[in-house]
Length: 265
Image 1 (cartoon, rainbow, N blue to C red):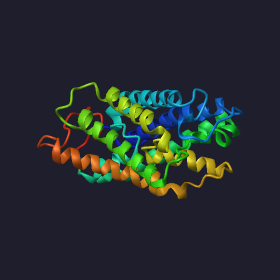
Image 2 (cartoon, rainbow, N blue to C red):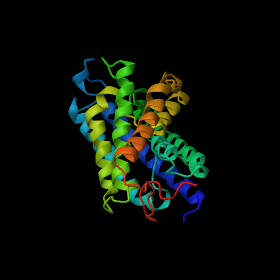
Image 3 (cartoon, rainbow, N blue to C red):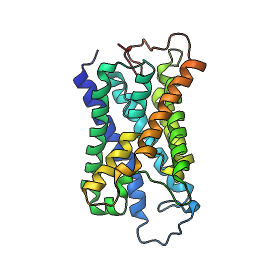
Image 4 (cartoon, helix red, strand yellow):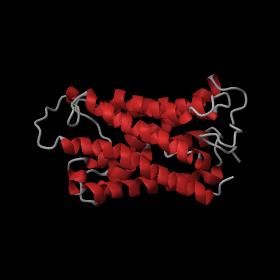
């Protein structure tokens, strides 16, 4: 069984990779379109391709790096790389309380380091133009609409994780691909609503580093939408799967279970 130190590093590096590739793709998309005339309507998209084309590329970037990270770090830590996943599993007794704080600390620290790496690579325009890929509420969308989008997107993600990774009936070897596709799908479908953060650490990292770099975005203004909504969605998905779908034994006993590899203590 991997030590907590190894699990911590797996979650930190995995989240660091996620933030560099996923939000990095969003930031670069915005930077590519700098100087172009853009309307403020819902359908204009955010970058060079406009409309769905932007979100297709960004969604695939997120989905690919999530799948890759799961296959690398799954056998070590379960590769949660998302506090909404960790808390959802913990709240339904699928994850040990002793590991909760180290996992959350690793995820948030990894996200901050990933965003700092992006700022170093992209320069000041990565922050001022690209926002370091931070999620946000898009024109014509209410805060309530963004909250629901974050909750629904995370619910779909964690429900997928439950079905393809946690459930002992899940086919082996498919979890990374299926979870990556779920991430890509919700971002493509709902990215133009809230940016589909669906991950409090992934949202916090770019917002926090932007603020340190002198940007106007204050992460404390987005606690409800990008922090509370994903966590609620993760817990709801874990509960719903356990009550209505899962077999009588809710704990994955396979040593190499991709998500939540240990029985709760």
